[in-house]
Length: 112
Image (cartoon, rainbow, N blue to C red):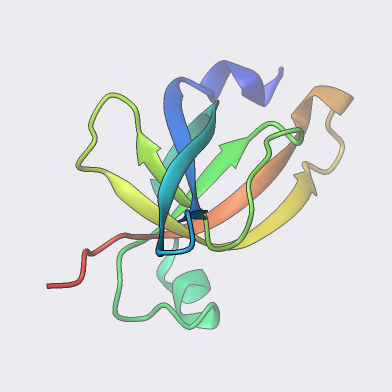
């Protein structure tokens, strides 16, 4: 059974881009469907994210996402995350339909 049935959350991918020669700001690049869940504590610590809220987002392998991007849940714009690590994964003994990206993110906290 394909993992795509779990890709029910729409996210926007935002990437830093220069505005003229003055400053850079996040701009919407594209959207994608994915599934988000809290990351296990041991994985969070191994990624050096021990004092933050870390999550794993599963999404299709053709998602155009990069480390450093910000993703925002399209149904709740207060749910913002920064991409820290991306890996392609295929579940053992699974059909081709279960290849996906695992995107490790941490909850975005705006600077005060």
